[in-house]
Amino acid sequence: MKKTLLIITLLISSLSYSQYCAFFDFKTDEPEMVVSSLKGMMETEWAKNIQGTKSLFAYQFNGTNEATHSVQFCFPDEAAFASFSSSWNSSLVAQVFGEKLNKYIEPINQALNTPIWYKNDWTPDQVFFIYQMEVSNPSLYVKEFAEFSESWANKSGLNSSYGVGFPISGKNADYSHFVWTGAPDIETALSNTKKMFSDPLFAKYSAKVDKIRKLVNTTMMVRLADF
Image (cartoon, rainbow, N blue to C red; front, top):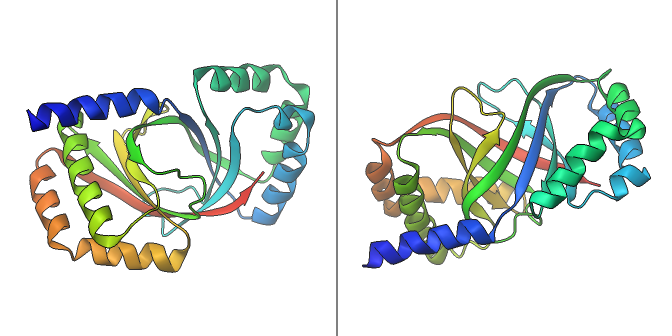
């Protein structure tokens, strides 16, 4: 009965948090020109009318991923994303700035992601550890992750965001899902991660999910700017 209630809670949480984040990952050797171009784009009326958050992140210690940065737009619902998508394709301003930005970047991947389950608002977090995985039993994995992460948060006093997400579109061939943990700064992110990996709760959780998930890549994502 307890497990059934947890699964129902997870499903309800998934429906309540109907949010979408578009990741535009790219590689650049001129980050200062990227920031300048993005600032110009985000100051236009087109960008001001986007119904969501607009952020630039840097990938650090990025494993096998060639991307160095990511521009991310996060939307509260389907209508907000649909409005952004249609306006991007029809806006001359967006296309002009897009062409300008493309002079300084090499696109790596585009993905539309959504959380399956998460806790706490991620918008204040400045640093994220991202764990990309191939998961063979998503419902069981989310259940085990939820049990572990909430136990760990209660034990450690963690109040930043954490959760499980997956790409609805733009799926990388190597992974099906990702886990994230947020933090206010790099020092806290490293300290929390080190403590978590050495805790018996993590060892127990890892043993439970060992046969249903394969860790593919890890990265640290640092917020550089919000627009």
